[in-house]
Image (cartoon, rainbow, N blue to C red; front, side, top):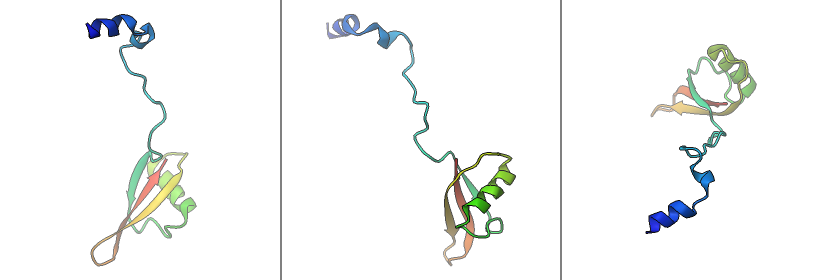
Length: 86
């Protein structure tokens, strides 16, 4: 009985499309995370230089560097850098 009440009292707009509405905006600000070797990055604070390197490596023309994280081994030696881009 409850099912029939739901079916007949529910607005038709809920059933126009068989799919739920999707958010177009990505939930996370980060579009991709790249792993770069320490030889590629001179200074992890210089985001402009890192953005230019990422543009060269990926072939993308519009890159925004959001964050740079140093990855170290147990001895403290820098293994790589993780670069979040959008």
